[in-house]
Image: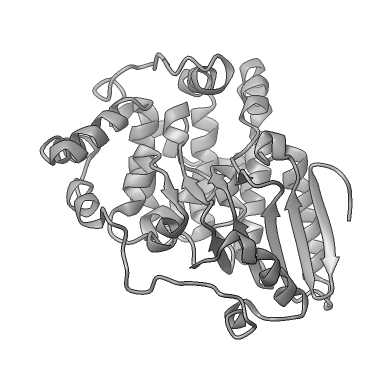
Length: 344
């Protein structure tokens, strides 16, 4: 096992990855992204490795996202400085989706942003009672990336649109009910899961191996009906109108959306709708276009400043309203990049 921000270990038949920045809630750096993809390639070619699992160090977080401060600093000098991180991250997300061996994500603790990208595309996604899942990007002037274009529109009903626009948080079993995780497991039982995988158990047979995973077949999250009713709108404005008429929950949800970056909300709404019609790799290519667009706009830098740098929680968005951040203003974000498209 290596030392540093990401650790790799062979346990008999299991390749085990540990994100090892607990003080930073295991946030992903560019170096971690590259090391992870390289190690996945190595284990894919190793016949002795039957499955791969990923976990986070400590009890607070699986992975709270990418190293946003580093991206903020790099992009402030020149937005193009951040392009390589997103290109390599999206390639790594694609590698996980394509991975030829079972990939098990133990989403124990906070799982947001980039942490979703290294978990949700796996063969088995496991939540615990400490899981807190969210895609909070619209609150920092960005969009729900790392494959959100693919998985959000494929969640039950309109749950994906709700998550993508609001940044709502789901805990533990709720993430299973929403279709973001496959099973729930108490954190105290994670070691038993790792032992079973090390002994060669296939993820589909873990219950037979004595791992007490709980699924949620046929169940939905508590707010499913309300979400489906309000978020069926064909535009952001229609969704907000539906929410305004949906009682206290609706008005509070509408207020949450209106506090986000108007440009990011507009982009995210269209992104999720377009993702429903695209294959996975085309979703990732679209995300690279969107990332380049968003980090070239002031809202990303203002959003990160307000949330992470100064922590005043008072971003001043540019433009400040959805009327001004109209469809025409975000249309260039969706245009192909020609020779600079993401290579997968």
